[in-house]
Image 1 (tube, rainbow, N blue to C red):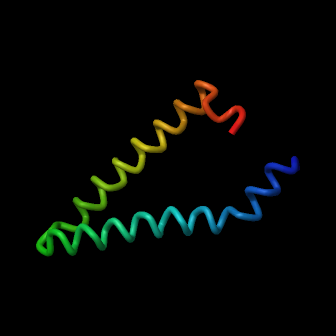
Image 2: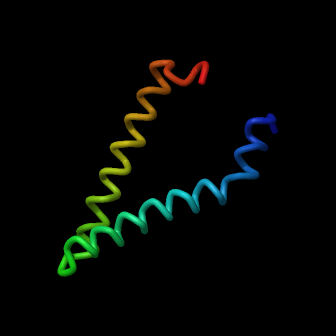
Length: 69
């Protein structure tokens, strides 16, 4: 296993936990702003927004924007 793979494997749970924290924090804010919100629908919209952000990052990686980060 390469060093970079070992590094990310050792931090994988932290990275996933951070992603879940981002999701849950935004769900909480949505509930504060719109108490009567359909939480399942809000979750689907939030996931779509998060996926859009990940897709943008993937495009940036493909374009070389992180080659010398």
